[in-house]
Image 1 (cartoon, helix red, strand yellow):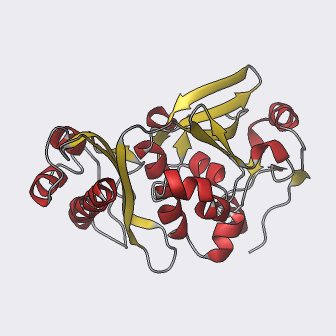
Image 2 (cartoon, rainbow, N blue to C red; image 1 turned 90 degrees about the vertical axis):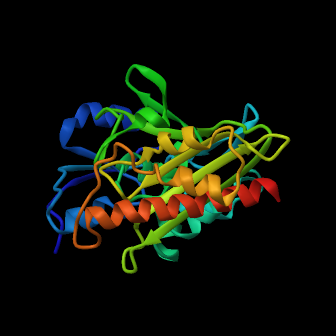
Image 3 (cartoon, rainbow, N blue to C red; image 1 turned 120 degrees about the horizontal axis):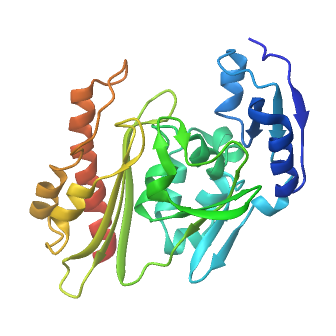
Length: 289
């Protein structure tokens, strides 16, 4: 199908984009990579009267060091994130997760900020952002604010962004100690979205036990969620298969599992435990090796 008629704007600065959002009101939508919005428009499931294209705003692109961590511009493509040498060296989960997104065409056009702002319950980057304790930098008419990843994903397709705000960058804090990380997912064979995906980050102490860990699950429920029960069960325990298996059994505690034509609620609950175990084992190997 053909999208409904709309007005098109291509600002060259964040402030210009915010001004357009204020001027055009709730009927205006931001366009990043377009892989989520454009298909909805073609099916007439979304019919914004105004599109504000962010692709000409240079300040929203790129990867830079920030206070020992790293800041990723919201309009940086999946492919650029996946292939970044700096990220691959210090945060290899970006390379692993990025390579699992869609196909090469999607990865070369879609953006990390667009994916996070869309808050798709089956997206890959929300789980990674939660596991890395990312901070979302947001610009709006009242200035800038920073929202922790744990507060950014509100509900299905709903983030903490206000209608007149723009996600500008994703800040990843530095990690100290012996760190391992991994991302594992049960991939839908056609779309590439996560039926269930799990991101895990572990920090080991001198004896090889778990000093700290963060586990985040996507695809299973209405939004990406931290598996706090798993984290509590593993902290202070040896990172061996027995401890990890026991902790993984708590994956999904308190979650409302989705059921659809791809997987029932029961099957998603089962996959959540299986892929939590796989992600933790892989992260533990990375930390110990």
